[in-house]
Length: 621
Image (cartoon, rainbow, N blue to C red; front, side):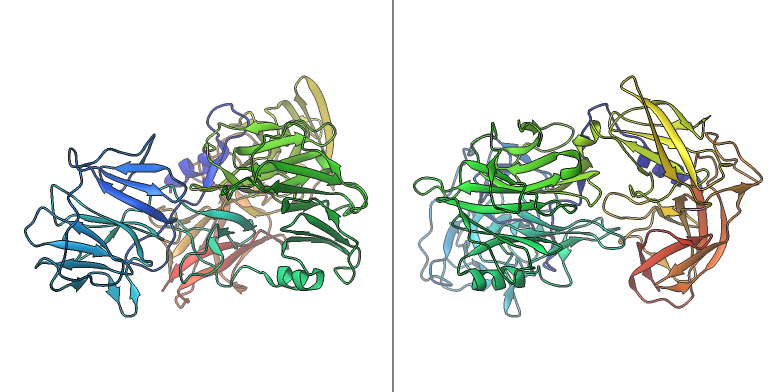
């Protein structure tokens, strides 16, 4: 039972004192149901004979190298390699095929739509990658390399990454699991409940969906979403406005549309009628952010067309309207002259963030001056999109090559926010609840005039536990931040349950027998017991002091009536107690039915007639 204590501690502890501590949500690999994991398009591969190292070039031009065909290092320049002379076969296996000689007599490789091998100098060929009507590698080959030290060792660069065979093409393995080349382009949706984050790619993977999801509990790769990314709105707006509409953003009755030639339209009746466009010649509208409370306020970023053959657009332009598009103010200020791709804003805090080719930038709308966000684990790579969660507490950045990253929004440093520590929502407080004060490391915290316990914290957030014996319909929370006393009132109810989740929505659920963390690779089994860690279940009996680890035996029981549901069906609740040996965590253990469907299911806790957040639990019969 003890292993979960270390996992729980990791949810509350943050390394270092840098404000923005970034965490990657997912990885850079994609599951396309090929012979291994895929990633973004690669166009060159080379072996170095001196040490057998494999080099690969990404579509954007950067070179990577690997010695173990798993981990990759970024190279500063194109490698110097020894190559074998180009062979002259009797015939090609397919038109335009790439040819590579080997050190073995008569053995030649070729690559095009498929990879081929000839053992007789090119008189006959064997297809090494055809499976039914497709390729095992998922795409045509852009390059092929043969090791000068071992003619059976070959590597191929394709639109789905780098692939290697150590046995002359009889079997293939993926080299993509740790290759940082995910071509993430847009953030389509953020984790919410039992749904994961969804993204789109810079260019569609061959034969795949338009959207990819990192499912809660996933540990392997991004997977094609169950439905394609929505584009009907763009198509309808393009037809209605007679332009190539690149983005539409709606809020209530208001809608904004932008085109590839720099025009901006506004509608006050959900797109039934549109205003005459504001025109920004030589630019393309990339992204629009609209104020949810006052949709007359919006921010848009555009990129001006680059010169010559440069396909990137530069420099960026940032515009703001306060009156529904009647006038647009230029707030570009000192935003670097580099292509911009995304914008998001928390208008209540006057905070705005822009994703650019040169990284992620933030500004205060009261006096726009742009500052680059760096460090804290954020890769130094182009950022192609940026989003804030609905509450403006968490910032998400789509980093080209690396994937999706998240951190507590830096603007919380000037406008603190109190949320539930389990899932960062603004649900009511309850006796004994764990809360997070986002934006600062605070001290001297009191709840209802009584000291509250401070748990492991960081420069970006402080975790506190409320006393277990609070009563009433509200509680006054007071604390010191930057030598200033801040007081605010929170609604209070007897129970306000929330299951602890990771930033990707993965619940803190463990096998009741082994203590193993459950996820997509370690699913729960039929008729097994599952333990969930929660906050907000309220009072316990016998009473227990806040800020003290729960005992290892004779655990205090939750007073509220606790129920559990799997896809809406009630489960047997075996116990609901404090989590042994830990501060502020509750443990609810349930038994799964003996007959279950294989795959993900929705799980939810109810305490005192109040439902928790929904989470995804992976199950196998």
